[in-house]
Length: 498
Image (cartoon, helix red, strand yellow):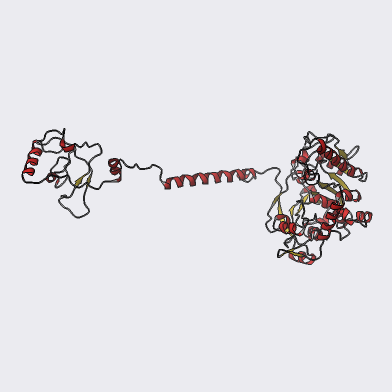
């Protein structure tokens, strides 16, 4: 007899279709609708086992069970024959019933596969959002174009020219420049800008620099030249927006002035110090390939190290252009003023020798002024007054690079006190003093700011001195629109428009 109350014989054959057993002599007991059959062939279903539903109540020794005469008589007969009825072996059960019957485990609704899937979906969603944001901000989404966009393509000088002139970056790669052609009335007018980016002062530093974009062109791509003086947007740069733009990549580590004839080896790597040759090779390429020979007007500008290069190379570049060209220079953030002592003088001499910077007549007027101290012509505070080309100086009185590397101050100009305040005032006076020694026709814009990149940033149209922005002051000077002086010198301790 099965412990469900049915004789096994009753279960032989096809299971009853009714939910209740059809025998009227037995009490109605719901018959489970889940059957499980052994895998072995069993045509008469004699091995079928009933799976008890989880709500089935069992009685210990049938205590409290309803009276069943037939079951009682069978028990008495089994006892007389010496047989003891035993419950059949528990049938295998499905996972669902086993979990409920055992009460020992529950199926977790979050499997490892589901968790991984959710995490992957979240990561993919984040990547898509980031990509769409980047496309929108760069003007590539929905055809949107940033009105300030001035993406310039990189051009490397030819292999033959590089080999012939030994014009190589620190790591031996060919130098290059970014170029945006002029349009309309600006087709034959040129803005040639020298890039900046610090310098290397010994072989170890130059070796490290050769592994970066500041000493190589191997990893360069396009470049955005959309701000400040180089902007191609008419609203921001109405006088020069459609001129040709040339952005010369800086990769010699010595302000386009190194001129060592032979390379040197550092840590097994060959280093080239050929900044002057790079500048000449770029000018030759512009003349022969880009149409600089047809130029009517050329402005040589630069920022930071490029600004220092303008002071040194201004007159040399003029000698490489047709004599009929209207030529002016615009150095930005390159006027560094050093308080010299014997230790610093030795440093500048050693650096000049290492780079070969003392060779070449690139600044003849200054070299004639300091025949025994040629290294001084590498410093704008000495070189600026001897520039013979028409020049407009753009420089912050509290240049951010100078505050950190020359004055070594940790405070902001508007919050400096005591000796730091005195150092700031000394530096401001020195910068203004250099501009005071320029020829009368030269212009200058010196705001009391701690800026370092005015010429190629939005500050070019925001900072004001004497009611003018750098953009307006330079344009008025260039086109001879200035009524009084072209010197915009800020005497305030701090300019609120910075």
